[in-house]
Length: 216
Image (tube, rainbow, N blue to C red; front, side, top):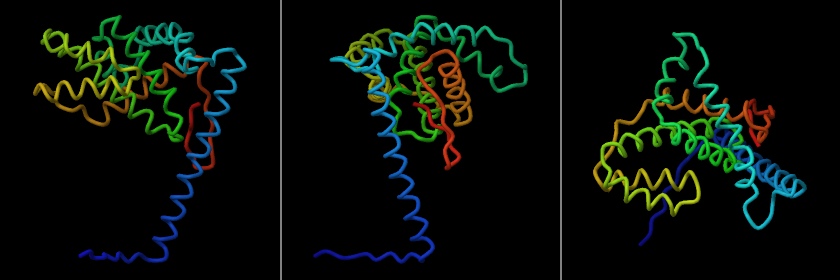
């Protein structure tokens, strides 16, 4: 026997919900349009073939991004700024791992065409830094676990896949860390976003009527 649950909403609430749904659909349509334009641009540049064009473009721009990140780490910042306070976290990452972090960060951004607002991209980048740093710490403390995890990571082709593999492996092996505060992850995500925007030619910003910025 089934039962029906009725939820009453005011006309105003229903109208606001409808407007929000319309905005979401418009945002998705806009993202798809920009993605198609990007693919056409890649094709005209001879960078879109049997391999994913965005991956080819990452490879062509990766050196620029890594160089930009290194310059940022060497910069001088006001001692009371959030950047100066959190920079030591990024500096503790070994150079080879910094290169992997930036490569994955580019992958995150190039695969974030559905994020018309910057907020989602910044949070993804902050999560990426958190997972990367704590994976490095765990690698130094547990070589056996790291060896197994390395094989699992080699089977993943995206930054999101590698993040999930790390989180799953640590969870099933009862290894975890205290989650970083949202403020810390947001600042770190903003730093990575700034570096990639300034050091590569992959993205452009557009200000739209919803007062949000979008990178494609």
